Image (cartoon, rainbow, N blue to C red; front, side, top):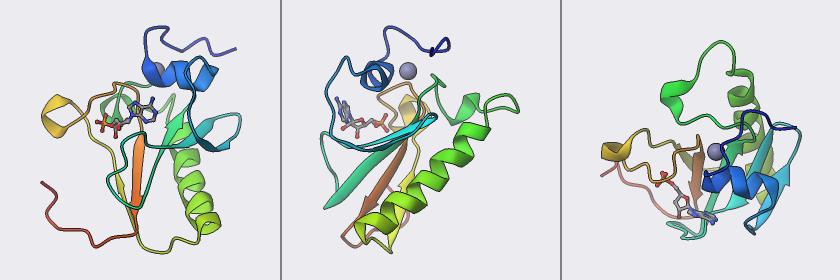
Length: 117
Ligand code: AMP
Ligand code: ZN
């Protein structure tokens, strides 16, 4: 079904249910689940089911799932009653990316600083 998944990828394993996660929402394109190491009172991740390495690999052939991810962010934050939040996607190790499968952090419930560290 997911021909574009990477068998060695942590988040592809979460999509397939091979690794347990606290899933908040899923549909045919995306999954949202709580971050295992929350950095704010609310901290969840939204990922496409297909394996895309990072924002640097988004292109005309795969970008529809990215807009869906943002629809999911709007839907889930509303459902959680969150109005103020930050969306972050780290791209590459220097930017802090530790899992090479595109994901959007959604953080809320505390004051945020700018610029981010
Ligand atoms: P990044 O460092 O930007 O690539 O973000 C990866 C995020 O995935 C981190 O915030 C981790 O805490 C989170 N994470 C790693 N493993 C898991 C897991 N099994 N379930 C949920 N979140 C995870
Ligand atoms: Zn993956």
